[in-house]
Length: 363
Image (tube, rainbow, N blue to C red; front, top):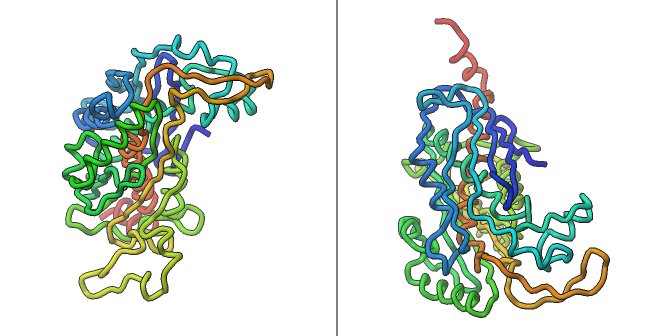
């Protein structure tokens, strides 16, 4: 499936080494001010910083708005966004066109479709995420109207975890590090992996809150489109993600109920072990999601594999690859969270009859 969302529906298209990638966003209300500067900024964030921490592939990632916008405002028609590829080097993959790369989706895609598109992974490449970030920027414009802010950063690289969370620091960090005191050690792990022609895994932290600190309560559609279920599905649908935690996550399975519950007083919740979601709906507390990325499967060490005929083969990759996909992946996860919340925001408008009456009752 290449489409996600219920009310706000996004369809992505294109391949890593095709002529372009893009998306069609259906369900955007008319009259939304389209901030092209924000759109460009989000695309730049996804590109990451210095090439030592990211891929050497450098694309302009400029977004062409093909439809759905007139004089800077959404029309209510589907918004089509296009990002052209200019720096693809398919020749780097000639030597592996008949073999399967360990850790990649080559084998499973071939089993399903019977076609070996060896050029950079095709749809399974992280390059596809440009469409998610572009559509996520539109979602952020919708959320801004409701006072909702999404933030992200790197919580852990390898075994080095953040001890403090500073989203403002992450904005200026080359690896989007949340903890300035752990950043140097995290950078060292990435550089060591790259020098060794290897890669390393990491964890992104993605959060959403209101401008006044409190999020809208009641976002989510029980029972079969719960907010936490939709978030987990969207994050797991991103290439390279192997686990998702909301709030305390697996730690909740190791404690007693009185340690896990979030008490309340007249000002709201006194803790946030639930990560801002109860019963599949937002509680009003900050939504907190940890997303776990595996090491980039594209490494420059010789590995054992098989070819299309099933014969033993050796895999030695060339090309340009991220030594840690979690770094740029954290930005993509922020876009995904924005898309889920914008979808839930639009769906929630029909939850109460008074909302319908406000729009349709003649006064």
